[in-house]
Image (cartoon, rainbow, N blue to C red):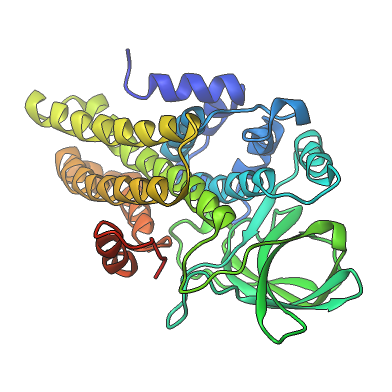
Length: 375
């Protein structure tokens, strides 16, 4: 069986023809702003991957989802990152309760319309806790008026919907968290340039600004208040999905380097095998926690387990990159920027929340018996 054959077969099953189409397009073109990858992803039915079959989606399991993301990341890291944000948003919507069956109607609309959903959920910012939203809202009757900005926000130019976490000021003056769904054509929503790096530019990670955007009450779900940065059930589930999907996407990019070394066939067999072992062991770790999620494991223990695997895979990716680029050789480095680009793209995993730097104390405290908090 060829390297990545399982992942590409899974991608073919859920998004027929996408892998072949991506393989025909130069990597540099796939990674540019305005690239064709997102349109191909939509046409292949990608937006419905994690939507249940009852709502018109593909109903992929967590294990199938990470196989798909690894295959996509091996072709286009930008599409891997962008699609991760969509799937994470959709998975969060599927596990939220918008009441009266509206969430299922929304998911059906996303699947049937092949809509792209951007993520405006809280992320790490310098000097601010990860769970603190960048968006704020006040009530106007049953609706919310949302103001603020999210940067970076992947899919900012191609999104059809924006999901976001917002802080809603209550009558008692305290903030309560909410999840909102905002159509891209809502008055007061605009996009401004933000991403200045050519690496992963195809993920469209620019700034989304909201100025007094009105969100109907039916597109709002209030979540549990959190204290001491301890994530609630919905946030924990979202983090688990995100870590699985984004780690698989970056492992895909590193796997493309391994595939290049195998195809060249010049390096010693021991060296080539070492790269394969590193990559396949990392994927086996990811599949292990994906199967655990599929079996029903959830909550803080599952979140801690996923974080440990994410950081271990992150280290494996670093080792793969260094050795693969060396084994590909100087002429390969001189003759094409693809290998250097993939290696640079893989570095992005280190910066996705929650970073190991921010979580080290929290993990140590958790494994000493404390609740898991997000720094």
